[in-house]
Amino acid sequence: MKRLILAAAVALAFPVSAQNAATVNGQPIPQSEIDTMMQAMSSRGMEDTAENRKLVLDQLITGEILSQEAVNQGLDKDEQTRMLIENSRKEILINSLIAQWMEDNTPSDAEIDKAYEELVADAKDAKEFNIRHILVAEEEDAKDILKQIKDKKIDFAEAAKNHSVDVGSGQQGGDLGWAEANNFVPEFAEAVLDAKIKEIVPEPVQSQFGWHIIEVLDERAVEAPSKEEATPGLKQMVQQQKLQDYVEGLRESATVVEAEEAATDAK
Image (cartoon, rainbow, N blue to C red; front, side, top):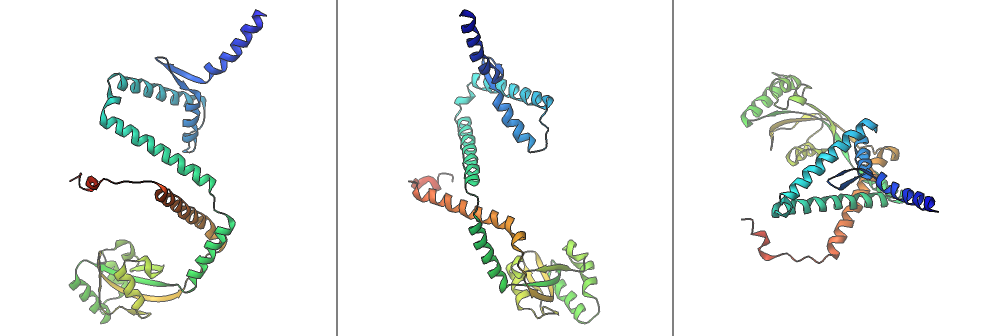
């Protein structure tokens, strides 16, 4: 009977000790902590091997030693340190909440279908333009180059290669390829929409980047992607919108009282 009791006691005690990979001054480092870290590192390309697990354990041991020393020195009582710890705790909780919400709220087929229908409808009246431009810093330089192009003293593509400060497109003769007008800054987009096809915009256009000489080479209707092509992006878009609605709903249901002086305390 005594042997049976002893065997039972050992069987009960062994799993508890086996769950700890190590102890540091009596403080356990659970095996589950290594498992969690290995799972995260495996997603970044590290192989789950005995050698790598030993490296992880060594890091955890060092971390525990340093953490205990910080507590021994009373650093956990420091106001700024306590605030940083609390902020880290909140960040971990927020990330866990969002990860769980995302897992539980995968967009339905009906939501993807609706998003795709809206995408197709938006594309129906949309146009994209084949554009090239020359960008320079000064207005006078832009006017001079534009005049030379109009007088056929220099070719547009040659002028772009020689003078454009937008080096990427400049080396391609100013070519920006096909794009919708709203992909560009407002001043540029407005000029493109007002331009006549196969003609250079009559005057240089100023934007935050400098002065543009713009030519719209062609236009065409925007072709909506197939549903198969669009689905990954639509899933992300729908889920992000639902997440935003979820967060806004939580804010609306929360009782928030802002101190009047909060906005001015930082001055």
